[in-house]
Length: 103
Ligand code: HEC
Image (cartoon, rainbow, N blue to C red):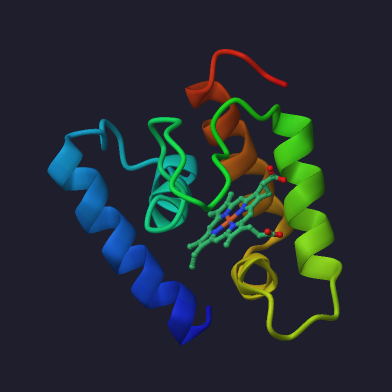
């Protein structure tokens, strides 16, 4: 795993434990904590698009597309590059389950 992702995880886990949302230490929750350092997981928007409310399929496809992108400057490309297929599947499942209204 790349250093960028590792520090994002550290930040995310901290945010998560402070909000008391870390009920279990399962992989999806841990990965979602890395997303929370940029995407709010309560569905609020702050300029960065909310990922809450997206379907599992949409999340998976978006992450696969970001990972496949050749653009070296895109932040989501870097994030997605650090994720295996299995990690993309579990974070997509977890985040989709957080949102009750898939678009
Ligand atoms: C360092 C900040 C950062 C982190 C960490 C991050 N993202 Fe993002 N993400 C962004 C930005 C910025 C965009 C908007 C990119 C764009 O405009 O194309 C984005 C866009 C997205 C989109 C597209 C949303 C849409 O409506 O199409 C998805 C899905 C997404 N991120 C999922 C994730 C997931 C899942 C994680 C955790 C594994 C994550 N992101 C972690 C910054 C981040």
